[in-house]
Length: 360
Ligand SMILES: Nc1nc2c(c(=O)[nH]1)N[C@H]1C(S)=C(S)[C@@H](COP(=O)(O)O)O[C@H]1N2
Ligand SMILES: [Mo]
Image 1 (cartoon, helix red, strand yellow):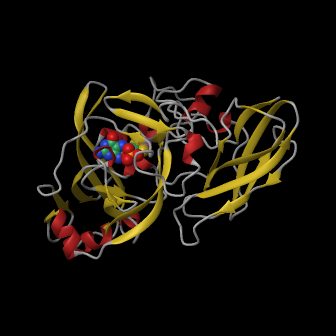
Image 2 (tube, helix red, strand yellow):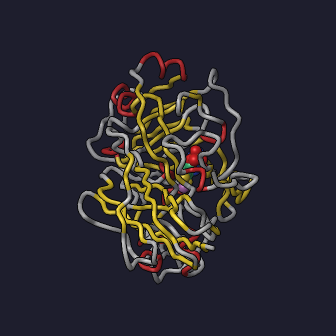
């Protein structure tokens, strides 16, 4: 077994807490243990109590509601959903290596899979009686965020249609444990297949609206800007709102720049198609000149899950560039270079992942 880094994770900041696990450990677990799951927080970490916490549901509904955790757990049918949570900035380091971008340089560990337990958001919205056919559902957290000298409460929204998907949850547990404070205790939203930003932590208010949430996080962040647009001159109205995540794959082990003895070497990692299937994972031992197909491991019902993969390849002495790329069920694959999707905030990097191995 490889020797793990002492800390097991990279901490970009502590206030707010932003940290990703050592990716060599990440790929070893189908369900990411909570203390290994990346943390992406924009502001304060509220100290909440599940006994006194309340969730309100208002806006374009016939019967506004205020619910305790107890009421959520007893008045609605609960269910568990296996889903990957992934930051839109995952793999930003690869965009950054192409040309500088703004934001923490996540290597590829801003992702993890959980078995989330809670109530379908749809059940709560049905109880409140949504009075529109089209619209948006906004989620507000109890954390305070500072952005460009403004201080505000975290808030985001998703289209009503996605809010009514049976798998969109108000979750209080993951992998059979209550949520930890940094992951949204006592209640968070889980929007499977969608960028983590929409899965609001510490949620205390849900609002049904005609338009997207009027919050800075929704309107002036988490958008894919056109390639020529700098952050200083950003016209956010021209950005694509990030919801669905692209096809992606990563080599978790061995680590980039590992030194290894000559011979057979197991290569492993994750691939994700977010609601579609990962149909094939190709691994190249020589920078993309030749490709080998990896064996895939996927939970049969995991519509929103990741696919772990592994392949054993032979390496002689020298330096080798090992590359991975996935194909989805539509036969589509990933861009070869990070420049193809470069944007000033470094979102949605999904190019072929490359590591360098030195074999002695
Ligand atoms: N209230 C609140 N919810 C939030 C955030 C936040 O800062 N505050 N960060 C979002 C982002 S960008 C991501 S990627 C996920 C991260 O969830 P995790 O920290 O549990 O991994 O939470 C989302 N929900
Ligand atoms: Mo994120």
